[in-house]
Length: 175
Image (cartoon, rainbow, N blue to C red; front, side, top):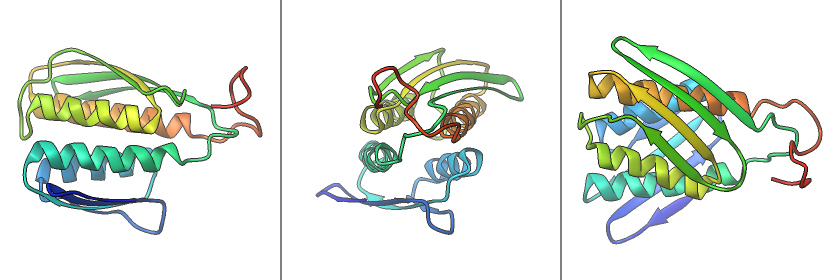
């Protein structure tokens, strides 16, 4: 998926044969590489833009739209994870419900990226991807809290996408 605006130029591809991330925002690159590794998903992200906020938002839009295209028939649908990282811990529950919603309990603090941009990235990802994520984060170091959160979301994502049957895991018959 490609999104080109006056502010950004973003391309995101899920699947393929490699992980290749280059957004120009080192911490975002690190978090996307972490997401790819822990979710078990090959991911290519190429992005450039004017402001950190616009870049992170547009990467989340593209990634969310790509996630929304993943076949949901036969997946576990729900995933969870607890990830400790030094002084921090993140607890995540995730649902591929088709209804995007994010709840974050706990303060992250500003680190290499602003907390508001980090949360906005995941809120946008949830809304565009149709994913419901609840995450609780505790700790002292903003970097550790953010990274633990990404790892917990990624592991829950991996678990939720595991194939466990042939039909949708929903009484509605569809996700």
